[in-house]
Image (tube, rainbow, N blue to C red; front, side):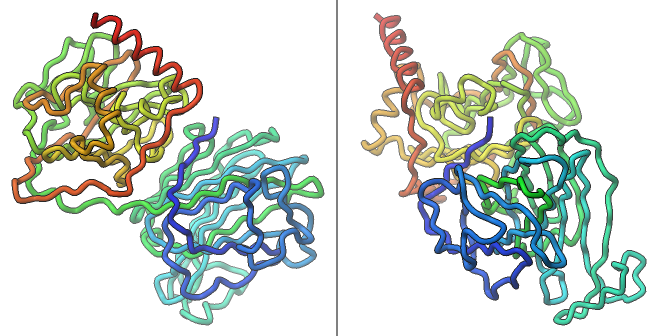
Amino acid sequence: MNRVFLLSSVPVLLCAVFSAAGLALAEDAPESTEFREDFEGDFDPSRFTTKIPNGNSEVRKGALWTRGDSGGKYPPMVYLPVSGKDMEISFRYRHLGEGGWLWFFVDGDDGFGSVDHMLRVKLRRDGIQLQVDSHSKDPEHPMRQKKGRPADSVSGAYRLNEFLPLEKVDLSANQWRTVRLRFTGEKVEVSLDENAWVKTLERPCFDAGKRKLLWMQQGGDKGIEIDDIVVRPLAPKSEDESGFVSLFDGKSFEGWSHAGNWTIEDGAFYRKERGGSLTYTAETVPDDFELRFEWKVSKGCNSGVYYRPGQVEYQILDNIDSPYGENARQAAASLFFCMAPKKDATLPVGQWNTARVICKGSVIEHWLNGERVLSFDYEDRKWAEYVDLLEIRGGDLTGRGGSIWLQDHGQDVWFRNLRWREIPEDEIITPDPDFKPMPVTGEALEKERERVIKMLEAKK
């Protein structure tokens, strides 16, 4: 199953260039917000600066089909100008014929005033090879690209090549594959098919503006299909930790209580077996607070972080393989059984997610991986139906003085870097006026209604 990003309606000022041999990147690429192209019925060819279809590419059956030989020096290519620094990039692809390969490039600022290759992901049939391209003005640099390549005509810098070893992955089957890259500072995490293969690199050259994405293929006459291209910015990690108090030292259970089913693994709380939740007993939760933490789930996992008395929970979930994921009000970062997040911003299973809970007065916010995905004032009458739903379950958003507890719901889950701060009285938290939770429809809605009926009957 493929992860779907639900995008905002903010217009995206991006253009994509598809050509057989490649075109120059337009200057002054606009600042991007979020971009998605799924090549469905609303596909608008006017967004592209080359004619679609062309001799190598056309949109068919909801995907971009690219094939054949460009007739030039390089195989057929697909270009997408972007703008940003910390970002997540994902797409799907599949081969339709035998053999062949797909190379994916990320180009960016070379550090000397020009734009060039930064990272190459070589998707072969027998594995994946990463190549890092950094730059130097030293003509004698031992990593300088050979074959007489001159210095860049604009920056005067030479391209340096770092070839990482081929990692054996069986990509021989002609099936859809999902590729995802997450750039944050000097780090990039590259994954294939969510958690089937993951590689993290840290290089100074990655901490630069990203300017262009490039797909280069050798798919033969039957070709390769590319679909669901998503580019979204990632908020830089906050440097301001002033006022935060650590709740977990990464080494002991001091201040915490459990029944023996939790352990500490690599500086993280790890629920290793059934036995109940892990509760912070040293202090009760302040009335107005911000909680920050990181979480990681196993496949199919359901868990949560409770922060108000009763059933008030920041949901922790594997949105893909947990049955709870069919209902957005049960998705990761939701206020469980009350308010859905505005989008799915989770990372693949097995990777660490960052989270924040902010409560000030009647305003509640949930953050996930640097994005504010839930933000509302529960006293605002437009949210009354959602608040009533939570009350049926047993949650009271007006309650205060509860404890933080990490739920054991039967699957392995990890938490680390838990800390909080008390929000001062003069600090104003304003809910997002444009917040719109993901909808719950169809069978998921019917199941929810049946559950509500049973809850109400049980209270009689």
